[in-house]
Length: 76
Image 1 (spheres, helix red, strand yellow):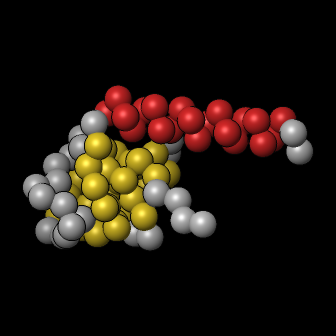
Image 2 (cartoon, one colour):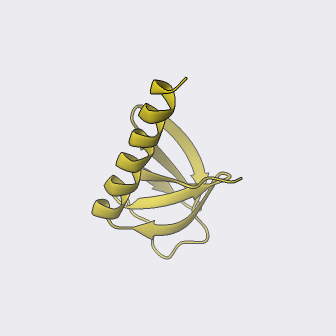
């Protein structure tokens, strides 16, 4: 199973962007996106930004991931 994670772009240089999520920073490829900008939320899969999404949807998805993780940790 593959998982794509919403992350926030902090800087862009050419086809590469630095994204962050809760203190984790990663360099990714943004060549599939039109006009990526710092502040954009993107869906990251296998080192590539595959789509943009708005901040509200990114937060909903991240909250869902946190809830799932908390439930899994509670049951282990």
